[in-house]
Length: 119
Image 1 (cartoon, rainbow, N blue to C red):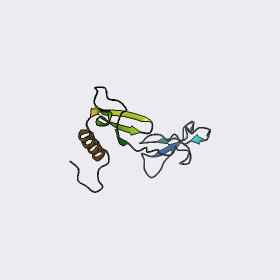
Image 2 (tube, rainbow, N blue to C red):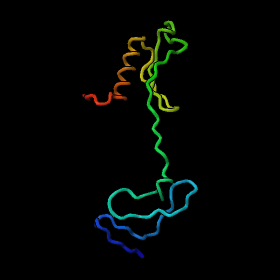
Image 3 (cartoon, one colour):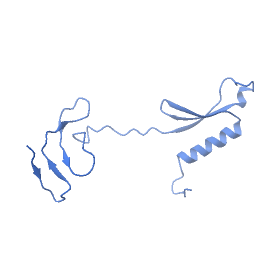
Image 4 (tube, rainbow, N blue to C red):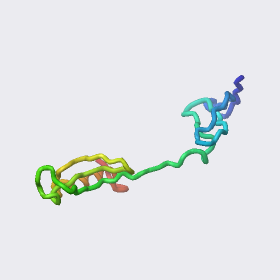
């Protein structure tokens, strides 16, 4: 049996279909179903919703211990992006000026100045 309770907005009616349980681990409270627009709720309350984790994306300059082509190791640089434990190598075997310029450009792209104009 499905009962529909009208509300002020005809698109947002509440149905009494069998409710699903909360998606939070260890919580078995029912989640009310809402008919209408938007995604259905999967948590019973904001307390059960996991906190958003925003891990910062960092640009790193790395100086490896050895050079693959025989150059002195202090003259070889790698540019990497890191978020938590995940790492992506953007460029290998760069000289310091090129690596530094690339890292600066990536940082400007990923973290634009507040209130500044964008291209």
